[in-house]
Length: 187
Image 1 (cartoon, rainbow, N blue to C red):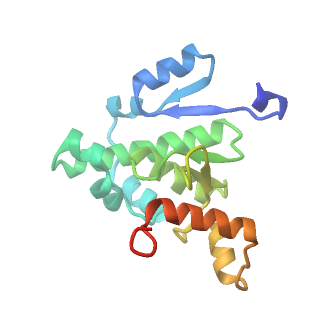
Image 2: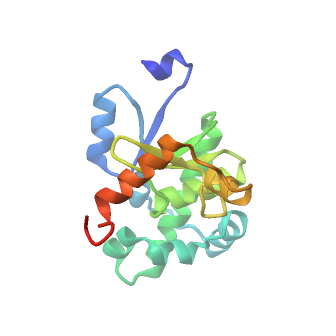
């Protein structure tokens, strides 16, 4: 309801069928990317090369070799893994063309679905961020790492002048450290 009040339409793309079914049951606008595993059409080598040039880096082989799920499903069948990546690129192209997407928020960028989504979003100049837990319980970070592999706010802080902290922030930092690291021989 909060999102609707702000005129934000949330669309969820699920990798797992049970997650997709639950989202639909909850009345969410849910899509199921893993339907690409059932595609019978083969994506040509030329089209895979086109996707590689258009959306990489990382390249298709790199995504294949770093995705644990694809290794589990296809073992050493590199061609099958590359077909999944090709179909994922096609899925995201169609999805972004069909829907007006202003922002992509992801839980990770370590799987075939999220890495290809990030690459297509980058190509289409759609902002992409990863929701990461932390820095403490009840908090999260929207990491807009881009190509730098670092959160832009952190990068800007590091590159700017040294940042002073006030007494309250200093006490919070010391309290945090004291709970985790013994100070003065454990006292």
